[in-house]
Length: 170
Image (cartoon, rainbow, N blue to C red; front, side, top):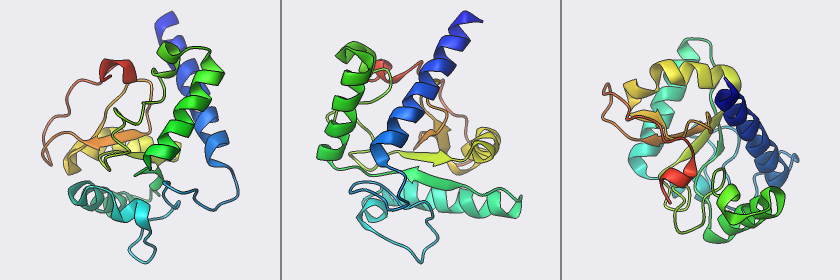
């Protein structure tokens, strides 16, 4: 129980960190995705996603919409500079690089920098994705980041076991 609380507490802190880093103006910072990806709105963040990941996310968004659930991409491809900024802010917030890596990857290890990861929301979409994401090959990668999805299986396959946090990949 305490372990679950610690993971949830850390996840909520990471959400707060990312929200403050990304701002609340509605405009997507460099390296970030707009809230909607519906084919009409493209930018480098969407274009630089792995094409298979982009297609899987769009297919999942359409299926979720049919179930009355809105899925939003809150973050996708990030430049190395943007990822470094997020990492530096996490180090300042958590007090050490070891603790920061639990929540924010370095530019060298971030799947966002390579275009192989997306962060999705809101909460009802995350619930839907936890049930249906694998139908599209989309898997939650880290137990402490319920919003972080990557292509980690074939559509309809089984997702691999989640890593506890980002340190499992470093």
